[in-house]
Amino acid sequence: MKPRGVFITGTDTGIGKTWAACSLLQALRAAGLRATGMKPVASGCTQTPDGLRSDDALALIAASDPKPERYRDCNPFAFVPPVSPHIAAAEIEEEVTLPPIEDAYDSIGMLHADAIVVEGVGGWLAPISESLRANAIPRQLQLPVILVVGLKLGCLNHAQLTARAIHADGCELLGWIGNRVDPDLLNPKENLVTLNRSLAAPCLGVIGHGVEPISAAAALRDAADAVMAFGR
Image (tube, rainbow, N blue to C red; front, side):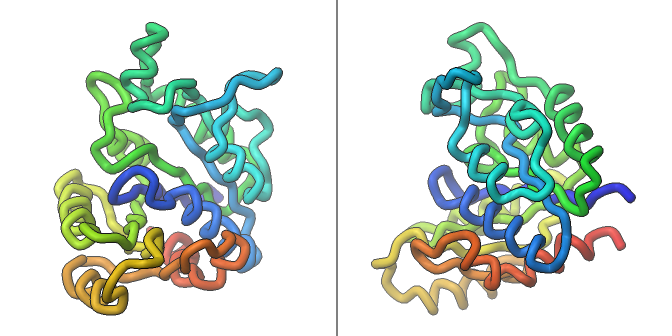
């Protein structure tokens, strides 16, 4: 049986996509499923004796079972500078393309996982090459999308714009996850009520500030259910 897949995007960079993706992996595993994470494109990587490594990709691998057999299956495009991937790639005369990403996804699929959680880079329209945006990945892999909303000032506008863009690109928005990135956000409950009213997709869970993924998994049971129910 072909594994279920989902693409994790966010309202911005630094709003907890990796945290949410790892929490979702833990939620899927808690439900008795085999789930593996993938970070197709990453910048800000560190040079190690084994090659470039992304902290985000390593966190996804740690949360996965089964784990990718090769690091590059999780993270086929890795760059050192902590800048937009299209800029980092151009500096070393490289280009992010879709075929290696699709090959890596297929390799993970051969692990007999029940689900593959694919984390994007930046936001929905973050450039990954001169001609591609991050949204090209879920479109190529034909994946539904979960939007991570960083709960901070400005999130109401960012979330609605991103949701509209996802729909306009013909992708299925399964729902959204709230991540309390700003513990000092005023009127957090009112913000959640407004998001529920404004987004044409269900809330699949809210992650508390600083909660570890293994503990946050319980808050994402609905997200895990949505991933496994898609397409059935």
